[in-house]
Amino acid sequence: MKLEHRDCIRNARALDPWAIDALLNDVPGWTAIDGILLREFRSPDYRATIALVNAVAQVAETQDHHPELTVGHATCRVSWTTHSAGGALTENDFICAAKVNALYLEMTSA
Image 1 (cartoon, rainbow, N blue to C red):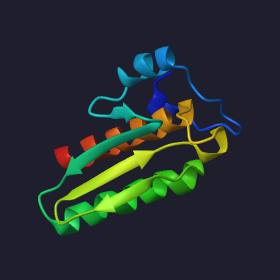
Image 2: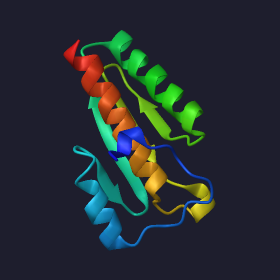
Image 3: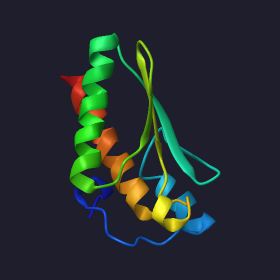
Image 4: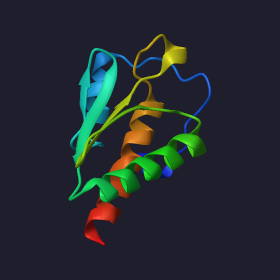
């Protein structure tokens, strides 16, 4: 099953570096650095950026897994990590990243 169709699980365990490398193939545009999965999204204007922020917030609430967001005029940087796993990356981070990728693709192709 594709990552964007899965739901986050409770008590997810930290991934080893090989699993992280493998999962990065499923989330184009994302980078894993020091236990953080991050991507910067570009929008045509501030309204589109805020629409993306609201869409990411909906994913976060639905999955009960919340990212750090840095918002600019036409950019939104999304950073996932799992605090309950000691600030490491878990499959939950990749599930949410895949869901956000799908949202962004939908929003930019409309």
